[in-house]
Length: 329
Image 1 (cartoon, rainbow, N blue to C red):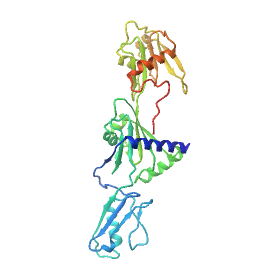
Image 2 (cartoon, rainbow, N blue to C red):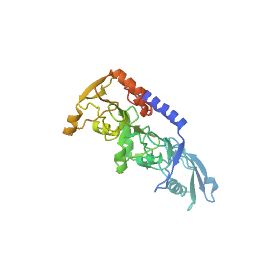
Image 3 (cartoon, one colour):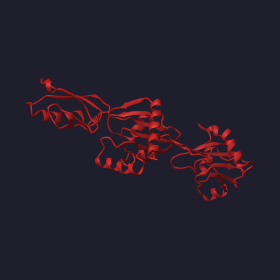
Image 4 (cartoon, rainbow, N blue to C red):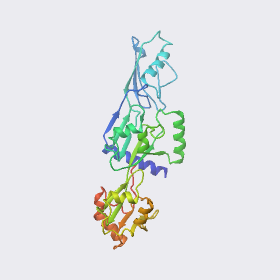
């Protein structure tokens, strides 16, 4: 199972790499760019060329400094912090060394991928810590068909994250086939609290999920499909969205054809719309419900076929034939 999940993710990366342009998100922060494995640096010492060197951070984030036996840890340090440490080391041989550190190549950042219902699906190279809301905004914001659910798949430990964050990732990875995920809602993300608007990291996959449809047919003003957004959709709201009922509508005989759990078969739910309206009861709809405002004249199979041919045209992608949407992670 673990191998299957990783293969799935690798295939997804291969797909998005061919589709999405990669963009660098950069901004000044208190610490700036933090070094990681694979990054290459150049160190120069004013007037002391024998101490100049170039180095690439190894898999543990260490570098070799000339004339010193032990490697120096550069992991999650910026160029200023690393310059201070190199200066202290060289102070054993030189008096007041003037050291400069330059990052030659930044190779440690796996791109963050965001796709789904955003206006500009793409990849970003994060040069600092960003919050989820910032990445969604950089991708153009959510589209009109977004359902309100955002899922983050963390494919690797949080780069330069806090000790608790890394420990938490390892604990989750042990129970989720190595790829922990978290779910948030667009409305809570917009509120801006740290709990609902988390920091995202290199290698994360962010999926803004599409809203699930329901289909309304029969004696309504505009038979079509409508989407269930984040806060759900009631029967009355759905009927209002399609313009309301026709005069010929048999309001005492409205039927919902609903998929049974883990099945393509449907159960039939009969409702009296007049009673519901008088009592103020809300009947919440579920994804892929078919609401028929009339006495059934056709079999459910024929009804589904009609929706697929006609009503499904109101949606990009058409009728799902009872199968929930699959997201390529």
